[in-house]
Length: 318
Figure (tube, rainbow, N blue to C red):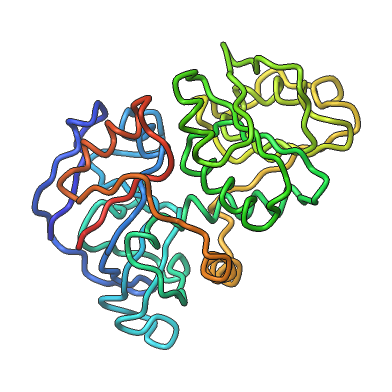
């Protein structure tokens, strides 16, 4: 089969498109024919060598959509079943989805019911599922004012679309480090853009709910912009910082406020299908911003790392 292999950490040029042996099923694992997948910032971190647990050579890719090619669980995962897989250790402890086929643990493969095209379905798993789980944890109501910190990211745009579909009267602001993206983000549906400078929001505004995608690098500053009884949901690490350091909950949490999180490894098959039904019922446009093909992985990584990127980037095999 064709796959994109990384032999050593480095830039996008380390992603090599070549022939590799097709995986063979083993007990408890099934083979998925990969129809498409999204590109994620965590894969860029790994490519750069910033994921200490990942050993090279490796086929990256932490999510995919496809169909069952060879199964060890014919009752739950029959041949031809449409499936989604997210996270676990795919693309990290074992080879992931940057390939025509991927071998996955059965418990990490989720049968789905959807008529979405492969292009649109490929945009959903990691991105919209993270946005959806975070939206639920933020406990939104019609009186909220919301800030998306990391507005131009795929998850940020997905969250915006879900909020606009479910709560059309809630104003949603977005933050960006790039002044030149302001109109582009407004066109995407944000009500206001707040510029971020050196990890600080250049505004005195406060919000009742903050969707934090920059992560530990900016959480302390986000609490400076949270109303009393407000909630921050931290679901991303776009700031390249993995841990909260020198964080005193008594001092650093805003008075009478709440900090929660959502992680896409917290996958629930029923919730995933609820999300797909919601996308169909509410006619939410999940069309990716950019589509590449498997042999274009270096270009896909370059685009996602650039200041031009906005929304979700997917790769198709068909």
